[in-house]
Amino acid sequence: MKNETVWSRIFDVFNVIFFVLISITFLYPVLYIISVSLSEAKAITEGRVFAWPVGFNVEAYQYIFKDSTTINSVGFTALFTVVGVAVSVLATALTAYPLSRRGFKGGGMIMNAIVFTMYFSGGMIPTYMTIKSLGLFNSMWSLILPNLVDTFLLIIMLNFMRELPYELEESARVEGCSNFGVFWRVYLPLCIPVIATLTIFYAVQYWNTFMPALLYIQDRNKMALQVKLYTVLSSFSDAIDSTSVAASSEAATSNVLPENVKGATTVVAVLPILVVYPMLQKYFIKGVAIGAVKG
Image (tube, rainbow, N blue to C red):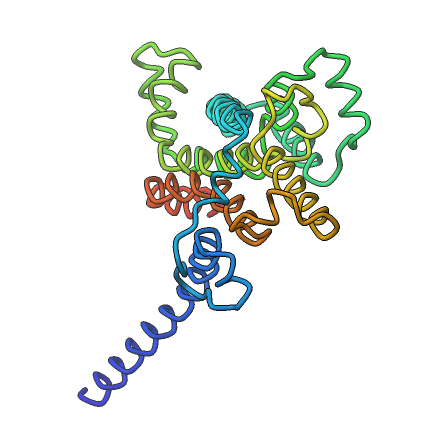
């Protein structure tokens, strides 16, 4: 028994060390990017930046936000992310509910058609022509409607609802609930864990929207954040290239390198998700685990 206890403790210590090292490998790139975004240009060029900032330099963030359209991009992206998440989660739940019910005729055929979209799509040009014909250009709906329901997330929600006891629906119908009443009053409150999971997935998807925003949004005041950060980084790189010929450029004399701007753009892009995720982590894990049990 003592021998087993000793080996058990050794195993536990090994596990702790192993997972600490794994955690460091995930955490270090984040710390490094933040450090680079806040470090002095000289320290970066000399390779003295590792896990914490050397000096303190916020000029990269000032460069990003000196253009007023950046603030508009943050606001617009936050708006269509919130609206998109709300609409997508509701649409996913409304689609999953009837498909999860017993005796729903044609449910298998409908589900096969939905799964088909995971492997095949209409393509970029037909989608572009559809968005244009619907008059959705320069509208946040052009970024929401084409990806309203994610098939993978629908499967997670569907499997979660199938695990709920059928007796709950029977009891609700005895009390006089309609189909929508059963969905709204019984099933939806019980789906909070999987709704949190879908919220994170959809939030990341909408917040990181790039190509659709590049194609469908032409109004500078409605530019998605990822597109705006890309243009900022591109303009800064062009300015740096021009200083190789004309050293009088402002970018040449400032304490900012392309590495600073790249780090700052990365931090601005991922920080909101890093803030939101810990709040929903326990629901996220539970929702994925339960929603992926059965197919």
